[in-house]
Image (cartoon, rainbow over all chains, first blue to last red; front, side, top):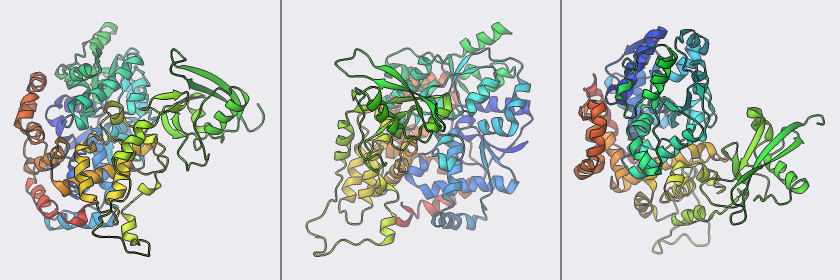
Length: 292
Length: 326
């Protein structure tokens, strides 16, 4: 399988560990990641608040790059997934398409609208398939109770994202089960992590993050896992602030999606960038070592 | 079980503040056809099993907006949700009152904050006495003007969105999805003469606390799509007034940030949103993160084809037209 790899801004910088883990897992599964140094930022759900047409045009450019190469796009961020998919949807509006084409045509860029955008979670559960994943598990996750945390833009608006139930998804939990973990079902798994207002009103953002972590904890989660590096920032890098906001200890390791897969496939914590997390993942890795 | 029915198990939230020490869930098991609306089941329980069950309802036709509640953790109109699909999941239906509003009794909540927030957006036409409406006739609108309302006139004020919203849960300053969708409806109304004031005011009254999580859009039984109209309001507010608040500075700063390199420069964005002073306030946390993730201080590389990005900005940002607005 060959895909146009769209890592997104965060995984190329402060969320580098997500990129490391993705490459490790892709190699293990024989997925060829084709990089395009010309990909730009997706707009992250902020740019379009200032100028939607501009944001759609930038993403039409991104989509055209993969189209020209004849590849589908692989995203590893719920927000990139949402924004690129949304561009495909918005281009269905003749008025928007005319404005965007008008800006791209003089640059010799044409986007016909054929690029499919797939998140790693979708590729793993649908294209690779759970049986093939199961076959690669060398170190099952020992029943570790993991609360999946989806990230809004992978799921909603559901009629535009065209994937799982926006309120009762199960792909992530199905995957966790195959890896030997025990998925934890809690309301917060489809809620917001608070990240979008981290710069607007940090106290509220942290309270929202804390609410979801508390909910996962109350349902027995020993770790959380997310397919979105922005959620990871909110839940991991700012977890100390979330703790202050809800006034309760949280101490919740938060893994990126490909890190969970990599651990079950036998990768070392260093290979997956686990030491880069703000909240220690030692409780998770110690448990796997004990079993091995 | 008679033919064509299913055994339906309901776990219903019961609580009367001041009387009960804590909420409890009472279980009721009924044989019902799978197409039975949840509200019909609740009324049957009240009529035949437990007359003390409190539930708010009126029209039973998804028009009055009275019977919103949580059905298996989702905000729904009880008169519209059939029991069959809900039972399919784990064989039972958990019924709870709406969230984000205090419980008065069982499934009935106090909607005071919901209506107060609605009132704050001035949900009526603002008319300028110097420009009176034409006398002796109604105020016609063109089809194009009507289209700008999008789905917002469908709202029945059931508060399902308010119940689903994590920003409402965390911050009483956020007016909630319904109030903002209604605000949009007045901002685009060609008869309303308060557009500019409305957009300026909402920038400081909670607009930028919307998370764009789209939970409201999923919860809405009338497909009003509040989250998408809130995005429209943000773009219109910036066009009307410029970036005056942290939220609008963040949106505009993000847009401008990508122009230089094609990728996000995280440190620069902090300065663009919060200013130098605000960024200094974030330093202790920034240092904590920097120790593990030194890249946060680094500017990203410049993408190949950055000059194309620049040209796209010239075409659509420098020369943005009023037609580009929602």
